[in-house]
Image (cartoon, rainbow, N blue to C red; front, side):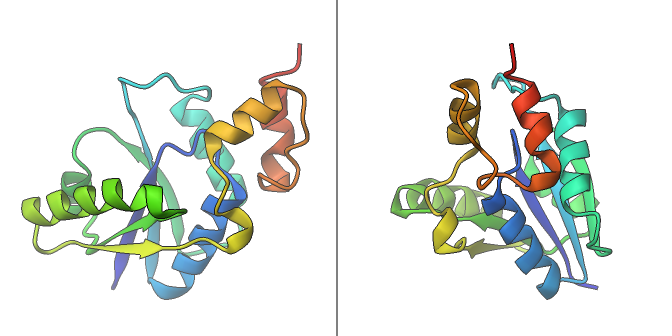
Length: 159
């Protein structure tokens, strides 16, 4: 069984994230979406809220599991018996950082490959930070996040 892990903060999940999730789920027997617990970073949504949103977004995908972790990604991937890490590349600016991560992960475990997905061109500009900023300023985010979570995201910013 080919298992892949798609890690990220997903704070909140965007249409770019879900597009990569749907494409990855067609390639691998099992896809684990791994919400990171980054204690050095202030998140808008709790890990539990992010997991819940991702579960709503992937409800129709039977081979997708949503989980969370802290610590080293390669340790988590090995624990889950994954042989692939999925990463998204939106622009050239992402490339250098993502390659450094991939090379370090390979150094820690030669059994785990990193595969880069380039999102649909409609989402190459999209980030969770932009979604939060637009929502905070009262803008429309309906085309930026999955419909099943748009109200949840906006409710964080309603006064």
